[in-house]
Image (cartoon, rainbow over all chains, first blue to last red; front, side, top):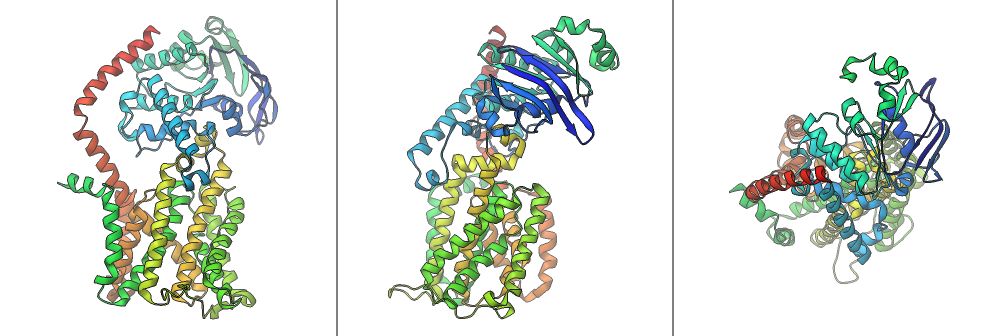
Length: 255
Length: 344
């Protein structure tokens, strides 16, 4: 599904991501872990095209997306969320979500001027898609609430819905469970499982170890931009390098 | 009580009442000067709508807006006064020139983000001023452009009179607001808003940043050029001062007071401030003592302007009044969806 070969990103003299090769399979939950500053978010930015890699290759469904611009990568089916999702606080959840399907539409300025049939159909499509995504994440009831008035966990779900509205094949979730309580974390975990059940591939960055160990099919461990391990949760748990570099050095993360 | 008044103001009929009031205004105005002030305010409002597209909706603080207003004015002025064009062809040309220059400036300046973009456009605005002031062969320098043609009324009306010109400006203002309304509700408007919320998120949603930003910029300079051309047609004499950076900051003030990123904000802000300025004219420069603190208070406490805050308040109120019951039901649905997920 997603094949990454010798991916490197230099920021000046600093290698934020250094020679990372990994293979993420379709319809699985893939997790990326590592201490702060390990290059996890940069890794996501490289895949989604926000940053251009210094060297290496990224293949998505067999297509070379290495040098592709972010919006093209999104059109190919890579959806993503950010650590902090900047939504329009003073607009309703629905209004924020409609634009999610924009990339599958073609209406331009001319359509607005003449109020073309295409614009009307496409606006309806976008609205339907947004509603579908909202239903999927279980937030149909907050459709008309302002983003400013919903909870942190609901915002996380809205961010998921926004990524889902783009009709992705793979979703990159950057710390989806940061700042939500254990009970809600459980809910989000179930939601990610539901995504996979519905044919999606999930890639996530997360610090909550217990959550990762329970849900991930595959874990990639980064440290100082380098891959230090990859494998199933069992393999990672017992890997001495990981324990040394990450779990052992940070008691909080292990807890 | 306030809520009822508010929902009344949001009814579609409210627009018609406003238009009717605007049509009746010259009949009830005390003197021609008031009609003149109103027409000027309408012209500025059109320009502020343009600023609202690039800054309010697309989130790019464009400080060259006054410069493009001046380009529209000068294009019309020079074409009619120096090249003997009729008003209407020159008017169309002025708008096209503003749009085209907007494309050129936008394609370069929008490579920069946030503050850098603002500073760059500040410089562009100043360069436009310098060109108008110093390029004497083309612009007559500090002397300015005289004998600008008034719009020809095709023998029916005389637009060199204040009141007919007022109605002409009103027509363009209504058109400008009509398009703004359509744009804001369309997918294109939502695309602009997504860019305002953040470049990275917008890009990840598959939005072509550059194309959409340049389009928003062109639309804004088109509005500015249209307003500038109308201004030249009304004043009939323009100098480089029309490109003064103060005009840009005035427009930003109108936008902030009225409500940035809203449809009626630019109109309300422009009308309000222009008339307050008029009524405080006896204070001369000291009126800034009143405006300064007022603006600071406004930006701190109601950053989304009068209209923005009003709309938020209305929406919350509607949500509170209507669906108190619906929310209880929705809690139940929320619980069931989580269950469904667990079972899935």
